[in-house]
Length: 52
Length: 161
Image (cartoon, rainbow over all chains, first blue to last red; front, side, top):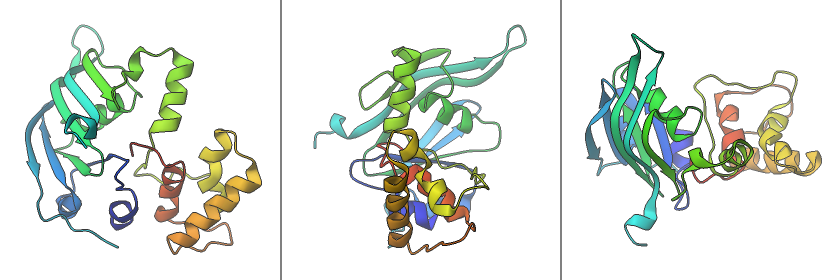
């Protein structure tokens, strides 16, 4: 996940990760929560961990 | 950059069902956006529709209803051959499984998308090696890692990963 967060995120690219592993949620800028086929909540993570 | 220009992926009212009769409703009207320069997570319990949504976004599955746009284009309306090209040029996948070809070196594995896009093999492998170096992953043998499996998806510099 560190490699993806450090290298995949780019001003000309949208990176989307599908996971249910809450241990990596801190890498996200935005978290869209799904349940039963719907997006039930979308939250912006102001404390995204940026790896170099 | 204007607000709407930063939207790379847009889903509106997306439904997806499988089967007839006692069909499974995997997506029930999803509205979703992902913006350029951002890392967006889709999270939720197993079976909630995460992978189905990603498959619909990337064109691996057709939505049963609703609109999916990537960079303002609805790839689902393109003829099949153009759709494949659109996906190759604009979308990169990183799978949880490695999906590497065991007969190839790490650099050759990373070069596969470039070769598929028409680049000469030597040039493609050289670019792959440069990317391996850039990421601090020097492989000279047929060994690889999960990190290597991500390279084929980064090397074509897709707009969506």
